[in-house]
Length: 297
Image (cartoon, rainbow, N blue to C red):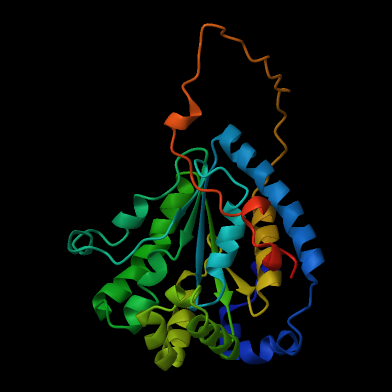
């Protein structure tokens, strides 16, 4: 699959605002009804992929990177939604401990790599070193350069071991990111998403752009390319990313035997304890407990 035909090059990041201008004028490039319909079909395909991965003992690692509020979490949530968490799991590592800081850099990420029959979605990955750690000064220049020497070899080892490695970069314009930051400030349900690191990143937009350009220069390889997902329109980003992911892994529908449920056996000697002995969760939402005036509004 040709790199140039499959993805935008890293240099497009510096032109994000211009690139997504048509979407900025109209975010409803896809109706809610069509979005839900397309998503449902993709979810069905994801389940088929899951069963194929399980049957063939395939190992899949998908990396999701990008700017803060670029929409990585939304795509991950839609992928995992219909899937078995024992087969498809999320690896979202927090701040490394003092012990982890003393380890080989890739060691704590290697612990989360997939076994046979597993799909692992990395919500940020070892590329933290090329991004936030470098920009915010959490690593030395020597550690930064060593990352670029080691990373391509590390990924080649993963692929030689049989792991299917897929890397996505979610690209959002500065205007759209600002809109999403403001929404998070105003909405108590989203405020937790705005971390102190997100606030600091506002002052370092150019530094993050330069770091991303260098990261692509060093790690956008033929064996493990970066696929850029324009994400100013979140719904389109989700559909396009999931569809593309499915296209990269050859799979077939797994035939299954029809399950026939046996009749439930009766045990006359068994007497259930009184219901009054059990503690039930209060029913607060059925019609008998709804305020009639509120229900008529």
